[in-house]
Image (tube, rainbow, N blue to C red):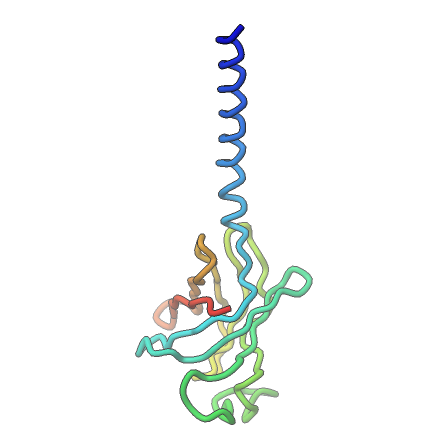
Length: 149
């Protein structure tokens, strides 16, 4: 009777452990990109801007909170269309991001060039950083963004 009880307890403990291991990757992979992020310049690696990402109806979008260095009233002189010569603070530079099961596919506008490029965002398992890749070929930019909120 005691041996049978130990086998049952061991089987139950094994089931609980297996359930926890199966649930862990799902929760780690679904880390939301919502929050405030510090972006570093792709060439100099210096802090560049602060971006706030929000999720609305299953899509993410991001707005510049402020530049890390430079005037608070900086404008996007290289932007095209409605964004040309508008303040960078508050400008939407990320939109249409949809979750693909692992990361987020969206469109990123680069304020330095005014160019719009497809982008992919993947939140690191600990939720404290995003790996972002935008563009293709020689114009591709890879960055690691750090969560600050």
